[in-house]
Image (cartoon, rainbow, N blue to C red):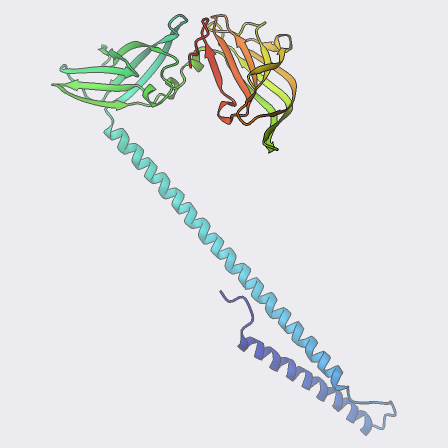
Amino acid sequence: METSLSIAPLLTILIIAGLAAFGYYKYYKSRINKALEDGNDTETSAPEPASVTRIALLMVLVIIMMSMSFRISSLRTHLSSIENKLNNIQQQVYSQQNILNDISKKLDQQASMIESYSVSYGAFDVDTHSAELFFTVTPKETDENSMLAITVGKQTAILQKTAQGSFTGNLRVDIFENTNADAAPRLIITKNGTSRSETFGISDLSDLWHRYLPDITCTGLHSEQKTEDGMKVISAKGELHLDLFSKNNVSEFMKGSIRMYTEIGGKITEDKDLSSDVVWDKGHGVVHTPVELSASIRPDEKVRILVSAKDNNGYSYEYTIFSTEESESGRMKIFDAAGNQLN
C-alpha cells in the first residue's frame, strides 16, 4: 500500500504554492503602483524576495499538511474497513466450525449403539479400597440373541434386561486403579458370535478416589530457584491458604492430624502442627499460615514443603505444596495403614 506522497501530487502542490506566491507578489505590487498613482506619500516598496519565499514555503507546508491529513483519514477508513472484513471472516469461520461440530456430534450419535446411559456410585470398602458402580444402559437395537456387558479396566459385568427395555448391571472397581483412559466404561454387545463395543465418556471414573476420599488444595506460595556457584538457591514465601475437603459420612480428616513440614535434602527441618489453626465448617476446613523458606542445596538434593493428614479410615495423605521437582508440586499421595502408597 502507498504510504508517502507520490511525485504527481507533490508537483501539483509546488505549482499551486508557486502560483499563490506569484499572485501574492503581483497583488502587493499592484497596490504599490496604485498608491503611487494616487500620490500617496506613504513609503511603499515591493516585498522582499525572501519574504515571498517564506510565504510560498508556508503555503506549501499548509497544503502538504492538508493533503497528509486527508490521506491519513483515508487510511484509517481503509483500515477500519479491513478490520470489519476480518471480523466478518472470523465470525464466518466460527459459525462454520460450530456447524461442523454439530454435524460431527450428530454423526457420532447416529453411529452410536447407545441410546442413553447412567451410572450411580455405591458404598466404599476401606479394606479393598473399592467401590460398587451401578450401570443402566439403553441400546438402540437389541434382540433376544443379544448379550450386553460392561467393562471398566479389568472388571466385567453382564447386564440384565429390565421390563422397561434397558439393561442394568454392577461391578466393583478399585478407586485407585482407574486413573487413565482405561477407566472409561465400555459397552460390549455380542450377537451370533460377533461383538461390537463402544466407550461412553464418564469422566468421574478417572481418579475415582476424589468421590470417596478427602482432598487438600493450597494457594498463596511464591517461589524462586536459581544457581549460584554450582549450588541451588531456593526461596519460598507467602501466606498459605489451605483447603481441606472431607467426604461427610464416608471419610473425614481426623481433626488433630493436620501438620505441615519442610524437608531439605531428605531431612525434616521444620514441623508445624496446624490442627488447632483449622477452621472447620462441616466437612470443609480452612487454615491460613505464613511460610518463609531460604535454602542452598546441591543439584542432586531436593526441597519440599508438605501437608500431611489422616482420615478416620486409617488412610494417610501427603500433599506437596512446593518441591524443587516441579512434577511433585500440587500432587497428593495417599497411603494405607501399612504405609503402602495407593495412588
